[in-house]
Image (cartoon, rainbow, N blue to C red; front, side, top):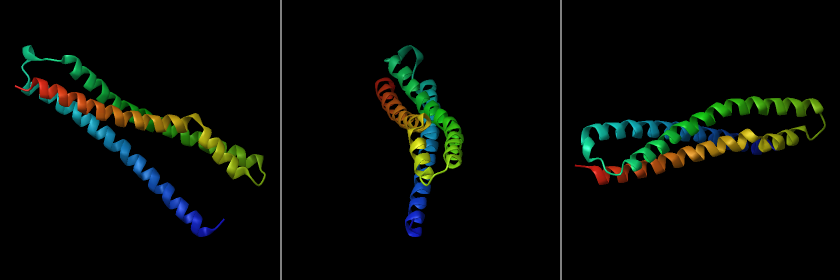
Length: 144
């Protein structure tokens, strides 16, 4: 293969991995921070007897917990995924033939872990966004 192509492809793959890592970190940080702020808000700004729309608060917290939990599970599963990808690569290499690399890449792309990791980041991001929206509505309706 063309060396320039391989270098470009390697650079794009590395950038993609860096962005995915960064997204997971941001979702975890922001979701955890929003949970902390919402508890502070509830304690300091809302009178307990006057809390309206408590289900919004609990749904918001649940979504934010998903914003923390899904990326954490995705990171945990990523570790297993790379071990599985290595196993696939080793198996296809040992089976030999000129197309071992293409077969390994195809098998890795079809691996269940790949789809799970992608979905966990997606669900974590949406959990964070929906949680923030619900907490914002709760705050608007309950602020003194």
